[in-house]
Figure 1 (spheres, one colour):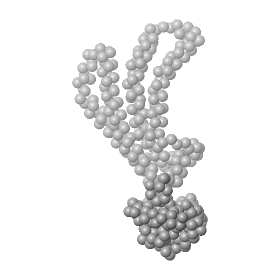
Figure 2 (cartoon, rainbow, N blue to C red):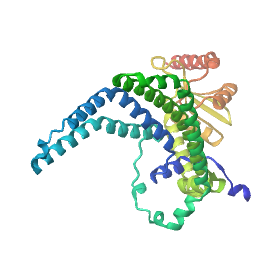
Figure 3 (cartoon, rainbow, N blue to C red):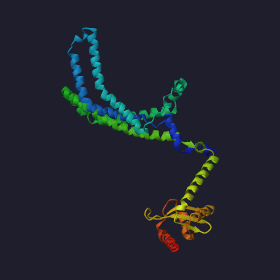
Length: 353
């Protein structure tokens, strides 16, 4: 009984589909953050000169002390609107990059999925008791420890990068402003590249863990698997009835193909196999019907009614019945034996004429 209650079975496709419908998907915030930071760093690298030029121009405008924009309220509002529009336009590439990277990261982790259930209001989240319980839960403690480990890891990366550049930082006091900005920019870029690599590494590990945790949470007991199979396939009586109807339909189709056969090979009382061969369309004879006992008698009965020759070849009939599926050609090892039978039928037909 304990075996039935342990969640040892992998989630079924239906269980996974139901979880997706409810908006439950394996997601790593660390991976999303890493991709966003990489995208922002790359965008800043390519857009940096333009952004810097925009900042320098605005700084020059600020230091000119041009007070004409303060003459009237209208001119002041126009000045503010102009600067706000310029700031919005220069920010668009960064915002678009962040939006696209967030969408791409989530699509890469779990694919496209829309769930209306995930958008419903959850009033239980407003419960202060539940919020406090989650704040001091085991999961929150694990997240805190991981955040500390991540901070230490990132700090070590930055420390080892800057440790070898202390001398360069000391010489910057003698550099011109343009050279100073260029050196600071290179240092910041070097730090950001290493941060991106470190966070991407953390993100990959976190995503693997979150995916494992997701599937572990969806595991099922043996009893749940049985109940799901019962609910999807119906009661055992209905399943047996469906299988019976499928079998009867297959038998009817098979018996309808017997009149097309060239010969029926039999093991007199137990097995019958009907073969069809058209040298213009087939490279080998195919099995169009086969059966044992009562079904064998049915095949022979149909064959007699339509004048299909019935030849006694026990060994060949047994082997074809055991090894060849319906609609499949006979094996090469039986080509010669079956060819002899077909040649015999051909000679008999000519003799009757």
